[in-house]
Image 1 (tube, rainbow, N blue to C red):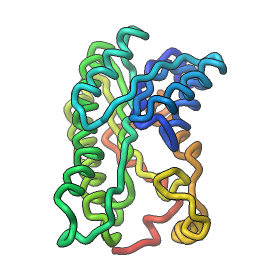
Image 2: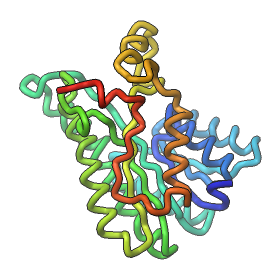
Image 3: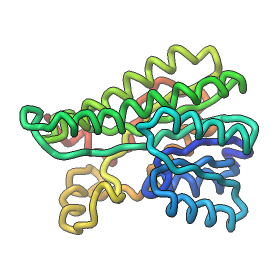
Image 4: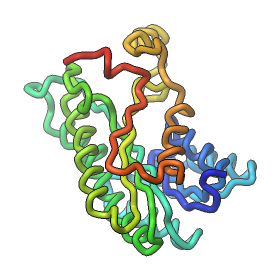
Length: 252
């Protein structure tokens, strides 16, 4: 039970990597506090975890709303008495467009969803972890904007995800003395809703990876499990790449 009795917030939990993490963390003994926009999917996930004798609560909302981040922390405190960790797993690609042709509204939405939401989340998650004397915060970034930022049409996405690496490093430096570890997970192509459901597109993406396949959400969630657990107790400020080798094959 790697996460026995730890209380963990998971944002972006309604599907994909977030939903996989919710199931895996709960099975590892965690009390999970689930956040996402789609209430019906969150309710279904909470019900499934409860049937498996796990402990889960949820609250739907918009990560671009600062009050929502505060409310998720309050939900953790009121239901489980504290907060030990958080997996801030939100992301949107937005419209694919060159910077010169991109609508300002698209840029602002992608930055708000991917970057500003991370600031909101950490702002409210840090204090209860300081009170605990320990904690682990994990963001989901991407190889796009880190090891490869030159993918056409993805300027907003690359900028927003690269910013999470800088935020991670700053937070890790600020709060290491409080016993709080802060890291960023960089997945490669993963079979989630964001990747669509076109088999030909999946095969093309798979061939870009050294492993010649895409990841399942469970595979990425298990890396997050490691970073949430005490098995990673000396890892902080890290951008951990779990991308099947795509970043060593693509060049800008």
